[in-house]
Length: 422
Ligand SMILES: [Zn+2]
Image 1 (tube, rainbow, N blue to C red):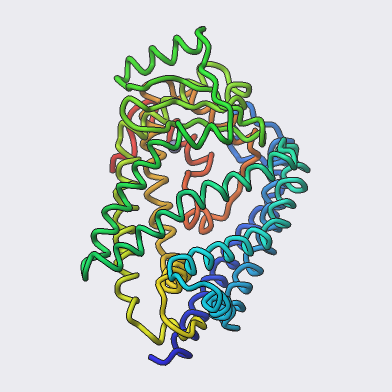
Image 2: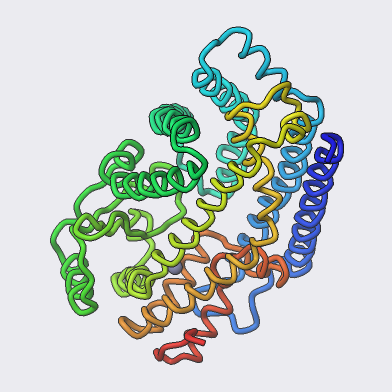
């Protein structure tokens, strides 16, 4: 296959994916605009017309922003590839740097820097104009800058040794290098996810142990009843960045921590907080995290296999503008192709994720109550101004969580019994 045909296939696939994305976005926008601030037919208690109005306006403002960003970023990448700019950067670095490892590190460093500069205005607009307009943003420019700087340093601190390790495997581990590398990288990923709550998360947020009191006592009792083991409950200062709220677990085994956003505690009563927590425990008990991890491990192995398959394909490097094959060029090319190549798996993962959400809801309604979970979900929806009228095709393609109406209906129909096991 000549380089021009490879490039044409990549461009064709990317444009097709962009077209499909834009079509879904347009359908979603039209549906939202058509419904406006309309309340759902069986509007749940606690949802006022002005909430529906705000959700509609916020959703559409976000969509308009995406309408600009999606094609702009897709065409920017295609233009850079078609002009051979990646190859030119590589040649300049090659003339200045002898070591192939440092040449690769400098190559990715430059790409990271360019990407950070190009995306900054969009990110600034999203945070300080869009989110602020709807009263969600609480970030300061200082926090915003510090976040980016810390992210870059952590990325370099983890990325540079990983790159060296990858080069080592390619050079020394023979023809099955990709199998070894995939296994070790999976182990490293697990180690990082274990250390993340202890070492990395505190760099971005303050975590305070939940003080003894009624809520803490009830959380302990719930965990006991569900035989869920954890080390402690922490409150995170999510309000430092935005008013959006959340709850999650981190770590594994004895290191497991329950993390509640301060915004969640401020918005909900104790019954609702417990229902949200029970939902999260449901994910754990139903082994959803484990199943998702297993899937991502499989895809990790496939990615390393793809690197090995493409390694000796000279025309591929030429198609993406590189004068000569190199390991860093290979990594870039495979990661560029993987986006559009896996795009059509998006609805499968979304459907699986939604099924897990129904299962966790059913678990929570059994462990606490369907009424408490329902009112917690309504509050979350209202506080986050989530779209009440997504287009069905858009929701099926992208939504990792079922929309509010569907979740409430499932909880109602369920009456506290288990669902979603079919
Ligand atoms: Zn969930």
